[in-house]
Image 1 (tube, rainbow, N blue to C red):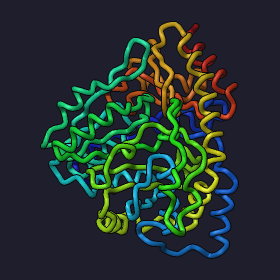
Image 2: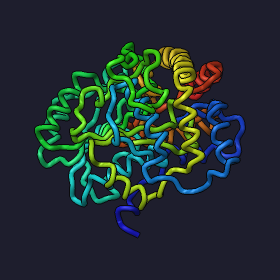
Image 3: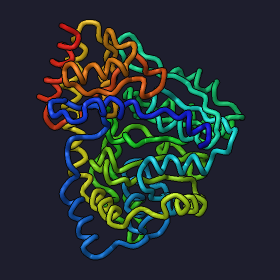
Image 4: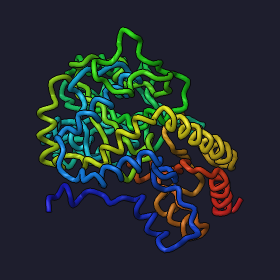
Length: 407
């Protein structure tokens, strides 16, 4: 085994979840997924595809109709990316790893904003890259902020990749448009690639909306019906401000906004002219995403204007039920996140968050993710996924937390 692989830490979230195996009394909020099943039209489309016998290989880059539908979906949110810039992957994780394999050689520097989902910094490390961590910092209320100048100073001409996840898992931090503009301009000067993990772009509770395409920007002949439609809420994206030839890779997934975590379907938006190289990497990794899964993705895009806003409304209801209760607990440092599906908070006595999270499971039947799972910067914090259809479960969970704190 390579020494780099031997040093990779195991999942601390899984470690906590394993402590609750076999117990049906645990209120589990540790994983980053909703407790809702995938919408019925999506499941039906995949089932119909299987019954038609679509069990063979597809194009490395994905079905042409899915790529065109994703182009339309992107256009309606952030402007038309243009043709031949989208690659379909077998999961958002695979999209991230493909981007890293495409860009990072051994010894290359990758700057990562942390705390963050641990797969992001681990992937360049697996490839022999040198990771530099730039930490967000919480204010007194528990809202995490970026020191923009510190990040700009960390990105130099020697920096191969700037890796960002915003809206952020676990903190809920979201880049502002001003910050994105400053980072893009700086990376243009240094020649640094930006890899933007924007999988939570629709799981955003701000007020900015992006309207439908104007008639002058109508889809090409044969374009997807996903073009146009009503105004949509979305977090600021680098795609809003970048040119097609910028050194920018945007990573997306069907998992969060489309309730498809178990389907393993994602996509990349790449600079113009780069699909062939990425297609080779997809061939070497997974060959292609399964056709029936891609059919599910097509169905999800077709009905996204109906169910995505409803999902975001339910997530907001969960957030608004949970966060004030956490903030009201004496000694808790907690803020209401602007994006994502997590409350990230500090409680007294959780300096070793893994030990504390295990104690919550064994003593009161409450399952949360330890902050240490997201790097040393998250130690002492806990992550609570509020993607629950039943807000009463969230309230009951807070009662259990208070019991554990003996309040």
